[in-house]
Image 1 (tube, rainbow, N blue to C red):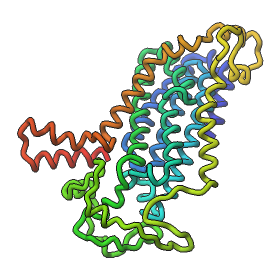
Image 2: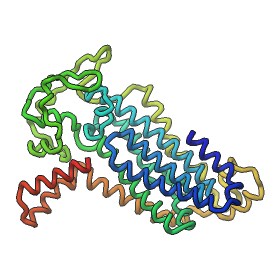
Image 3: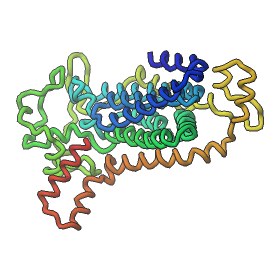
Image 4: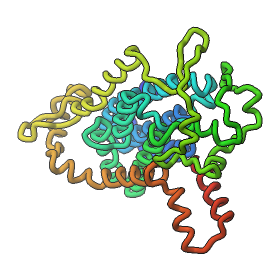
Length: 385
């Protein structure tokens, strides 16, 4: 349905350009959609909801491109985004499927980013594919979405400075919340185990029902594990684990129905991994259909040949083809914004140099009381997570 609506607007493009104000209305809807989707994705704890709002934001970019007259770029981004987002959603499914036997089969637990973390050593193939899809969606070269997204950003800036500023700013937000999802999922350590040891109970023996509800020995546990782990000095941001925690997390196995599972996530079989690898290939190389490689030749790129058969139109548009040096020179600004978004996300959510635990060091210069500092630190951390 989404693709049908985009194709409909692109097909009726000759009609829309002669109707007053209709193109401006379409572009305005696109700019509102891309910004709204990005801001909603910032506050999501569910991995699938984060990707869903990301899709909403990228569709806003496509509608914006249609509204400013760049229908070729809009369809180009529709293609590149489709492969990147398919890779991310399939990777999210692999992540959820790998941790469901541990946290329970409730979406509130198996899709919760707060309970994930440290999955790199358990599902390395899924982690690599998810990272490549994340970098592509953020707009990092040479992945597919970079080529189409940068064209939309450049065209929006030429169409309207206001639209261009919002589009560039949202590109930074996209890099921030997508890298946030990646870091919360794969960086650090598995936080579900830290939740088990955030209270006074020392036993790991508990049962998980079908929807992830635990038995009565867990009913009195402190659900606010972010604060309690800080009190117990079990920081899931740090690269060190307490010996007591390491000793208590035992690697035992149990049967859940007819499936043999373990206390740690595991990589899925080839039925899931093979499609991930196929989508990685398309994510890395599908952008070539919109790139004009032969700078000396006169003619359109492969995508333009596919979209139209008008010889006059193709010859006219071939004069607007930029060489690779000029294109990359114009893309420096967008790459800088995306890189800044990635760095900010790493500062807030990275495990090695965590902002939250360095925050207490900076507060010491202001002679704040210990309980006040701890309360502010916990409030900031719980708000972010």
